[in-house]
Image 1: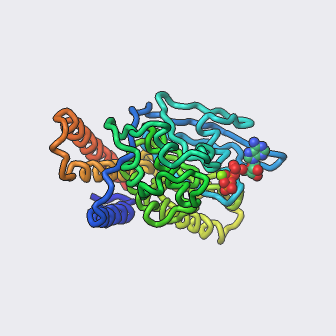
Image 2 (image 1 turned 90 degrees about the horizontal axis):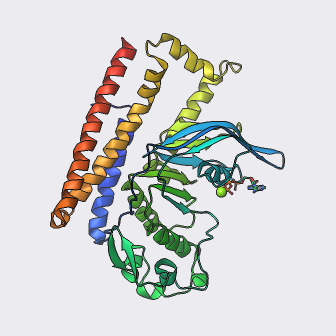
Image 3 (image 1 turned 90 degrees about the vertical axis):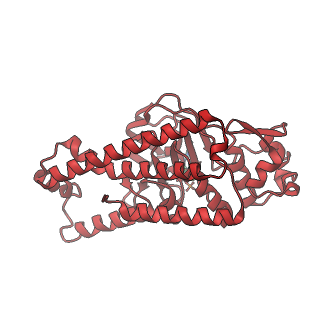
Length: 354
Ligand SMILES: Nc1ncnc2c1ncn2[C@@H]1O[C@H](COP(=O)(O)OP(=O)(O)OP(=O)(O)O)[C@@H](O)[C@H]1O
Ligand SMILES: [Mg+2]
């Protein structure tokens, strides 16, 4: 089996194995993000959206389609409009022009940059439990103090009022609070700021096991490399573009574009794509599929790896028979989809090279 993303898939798998081992050593974390019901296949469809404030253009005529299971990083310099784009993608703000279509059955969990959701006077425990001693995690009640220990708060620290917390502790608390909500669309606006290494790892683990849709604004290169499968980038030339892969993939693709453009500076970047198109025997839709399939394959492999890990847990077969059956069915479906995606990809590759 070969895929264009093979190197990255291997790297991700290695990383996950290392994590798994380290986690066993720590004897830690039975945590998992609570997943809501599945959303519709379409999550958001925006067409030609533009936004400017006080005569300053943030983006112009940007279009994208986000589908269930996409893990998208949003990258760009300070103040370029990342948070604004998020609000528009979530339907919380209207663009000046263009259309936004939201999918059905979206359950959004939003980690916002302004950290507006914390009660400063209340304790860590009360912010998470909201007056109750138990929170519901994956359908079962869990004591708030125990839950907070998963987020590295000692029982003592958990009783501290929020106003006395450090920036890093605050972020950990927000993550803890966020993950008590069931969600199928996770939106994190710079979650990695001020996170210590341990919490960052915890967050990456949680996100790798999440099968819903994800939008992540971050400047953290390795975090994005580890977690996302495509990026929306506010490029230096003020264009917003989509790239397949993580942060490093963006850099590599951007360098390639720059290199290609240098010898003939006047060439439109699109001309490269056009010449490929001329040679190809594929239809436009087939070309799109060929481009998208490696990502789809990688995504399926990630889900299978996450599920495999789940099934390998010591207590997996001790749970309710229906739950076991459900996971097994899920696994069989994923494997079938993976097989189909490989076949389709191989077929298109052969056609392309014919
Ligand atoms: N409601 C608003 N009215 C006027 N200007 C706004 C509004 N919202 C955002 N802006 C401006 O738009 C620009 C982009 O803001 P935005 O918060 O989207 O950027 P960002 O990329 O998220 O920045 P950061 O990296 O600092 O988080 C900023 O100059 C900001 O001041
Ligand atoms: Mg922002």
